[in-house]
Length: 247
Image (cartoon, rainbow, N blue to C red; front, top):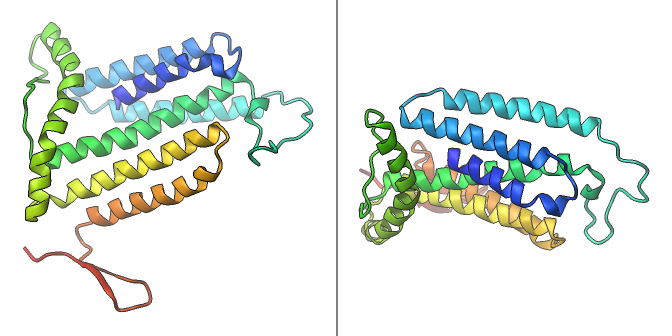
């Protein structure tokens, strides 16, 4: 979660010129995201459980503040509220300080969904660790900081080299059901995020399709993760689609 917040803050800061003159707001958003990311990483490394409450409180407060900013935003008297090229609301009417909240919140949520699903996949899949690191909170502060930095590289490397073993387990029917479920969830988040990004560049035809496909993958992942479902049938028919193997 901390990495997703940090990346969202960095992306918001780097994209500031696309949204016009936002004054000091890109720096403010970047600093807030960085502070929250550092606290999340620190609390997680120490084995604490305060970061979910802090993160939720910041999210609720940020949502309330952004709603107030949006309600008080001067929109002027535009010739049209809807852009004729996209048939979507003209977001350029909003001040840059408010428009920059979109990448800050959306990138954070998208990365949290995708990275969370990928990490859950790694937890339940057979693993090969070619790069080792330790997040033991009892180690020295400099060692912990070094291992946190190493983990940014070690996790994706270990994940990739573990994929062949996961494929073999899948073919043999021994792969944990949570692996396929979280892969579907990650794919659903990616597809929906790509469609939303394309809509920002005027490609609205892919937007609806990506949302339908993304929601379908997310729902499939949810179904695959629910251990109590024993079988699936085509609605309004008796045709069996899938049945959980007996253990």
